[in-house]
Length: 200
Image 1 (cartoon, rainbow, N blue to C red):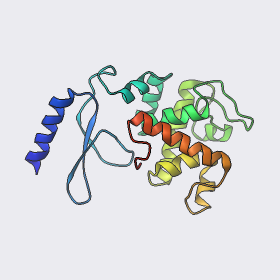
Image 2: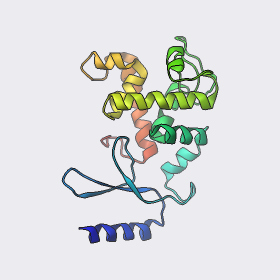
Image 3: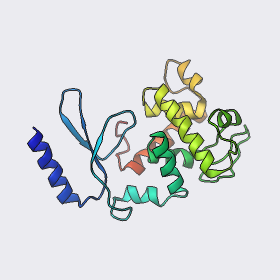
Image 4: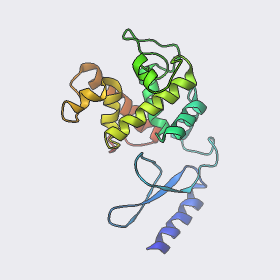
């Protein structure tokens, strides 16, 4: 088995010329799984690294070409959340406007409410770097709370964790949340290079 995996890895390295990160993990049956998608909460070992943003696939270029890409990447690394998911949330929340304010008082790129900003240690929610760090920290909390279920974490980011928990851990029936969650997940899948109906 190990020889076949090493052979597959060698073939991937030769065939792709390291066009994208490739990860290996072990499934519950003891088998090896190769993937180009690093999902939070799972243990992976990177076996092929992307050489540069220009050598990667179209979805990698979409991420590196986004506004605040370096700050988003740093926040994603610091809090172990997917860059693509942060970008999808930012697009839905503020459209990359660091000065965005909602009628309810949410502010900045990731539209942090004042109470959430304080709780996440963000002194200035209109500062892009601080806002991204606080938003990524809060997203990580939602992913942890909902056992890395991305759909529920996104719903909780929008409607609050209590709204998800109190309804039996499902997307709450709010019109805004029912629109928001599919939009974020569609963008996340697109940036990850996944099919529109791919499981998360």
